[in-house]
Image 1 (cartoon, one colour):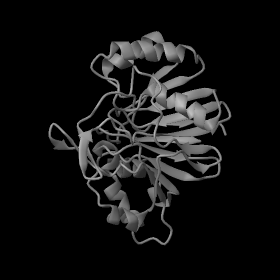
Image 2 (tube, rainbow, N blue to C red):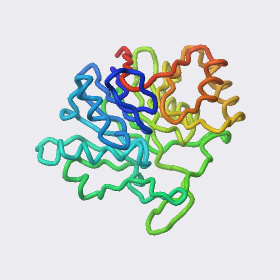
Image 3 (cartoon, rainbow, N blue to C red):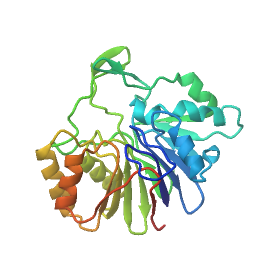
Length: 274
């Protein structure tokens, strides 16, 4: 499986652009092509083009959750597929398109479902969904550990009722490689360790070789950081690739206390054996 970061807060590759958001292109050994999140604008399309990646040939699109810096770019992808006979599957939690507010900005998806249905085959699920025999979208994450996954982010409107938003729709995608599980997160609102633990359960595999993506670590969450370090010390062969939604202090702390930690950004590629 080859992964390429198309959108991230960090970009140090000349000619490419960064933005507050996240998007990853995936291509497996069978040339099945996918997109995980789409950033907040058309930057992911621009970066993909400059990297020689054709996003007009996708087999699937996965949304990690319904915040605008992960789903906003989807409207720019619609034009590539709305008139096509063959449409990618769009895999998302049932709440990923819900209205959301935070202080008091609209931070949710702004795309009507009817418009999405013109370009994609919608697959809404809270349960794990296997794209193929090695690649799974986890669905709604079990929140096992009390030190993470309990932070609310504004309000969400579900079934006509507004409630505190703990981002229950937060999910991840997992590839079962020859060296262990590769876990790709969007923001990890459900908790980094919760996601990895659930990935192990869903895939029936305790070997994890890499976690890539946003870790939702900011504002000196020391207790949570300590617990994350202790968790990953038990998996010394697991590499952490830090992206979106991980602040400078958290990056420094993780690098200082774990051996296999690397900061990556737009244009960075990773290759995992099948």
